[in-house]
Image 1 (spheres, rainbow, N blue to C red):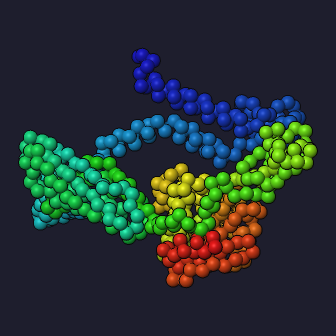
Image 2 (cartoon, rainbow, N blue to C red):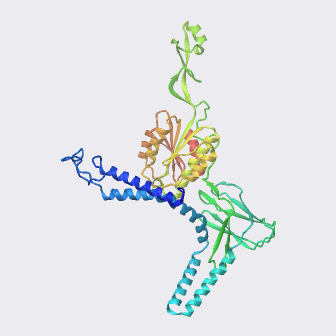
Length: 473
């Protein structure tokens, strides 16, 4: 017999597994044990192991090692069985509906009862049930030749906008196709489209509208055709397209060119730190060896008869940081939380339009801010939840994550107190302008100050531009 036969390969694998198990068991006995000696038997007369203690093999360790070795040995076989099951067996079993399994089990049970007790009526009912099951097979066999195109006019819409799509189905075969049904999953719901009898090369198109009442990522598709018998004992589905993600972005408002909170100076906001080279002139000072001669102010030098150089204030590019709390314990309702998301998205979108540096942070991490599309996509994926990390903790994280920010926005809910806002503002480095946007539906737009923190109350998303202008006044 050749050494490459399956029997020999199995024997070699079993031998390797047994050898590995033996090595692990010998290692568990301890360094003082040898093969052929009982646990605790001394190596020499009157001696035990190095520590003077006998080595014992725990039964749990043996079973654990045996189970691990068996798992390693059976894992390839289990992977092959699972692949065969998913490829050949499961597609066949998935065709049978719950009612179909009930009918099939009833036919078997009735036939067994008829055989056991001689009930001819039970046998007749079993034959009828089994015949119905066989007849249902004729409704699902055969191949369908559809050409299906799923088209969404826009894959990104705002809350309240119309999301319109279409399904175009064509008969690509050379024979007519019987009426059928198409299913289109839309999120947790399923839309059903009925196809008429279609001649070769005939095209049938259906339009549909997806409601966008709330912010969400809706999975549309895949489009699948359904074949079923009249009793729905068997149900065969065939996928024709890939699923498409529909992003329902949060509603945003335009803040306008005079929106407050945005630093309008292209060169940034001046600081109290002095520099020898910048664009914001501060004063003149005496020349010190090593200064750049290009900054010598020659007119003043000629008047004072000593070298004078220009001194500048350091400037920095406007860098916005937004802290958006997603802790639902800080909000009064879901509508209030959604307004906070819209406020953060509106401010961030305006900053990106003005080509400002931007960072947006939540309790679950930073959001992408490379483009407005990336920002709104990540804003759409935000899911609020009760959590231990509050807006104050998020403010501290923001100060550590974005140390070079020039303007910081804290977007919070109505349950945040003045003490918490003061604590959050204390984590902001000196020289950084900080504003808190407190969302409270129905409240009048207002502005207040808590130390160096400007607190803006927003009762409606359309009031955001108004309160931002108040902050600049």
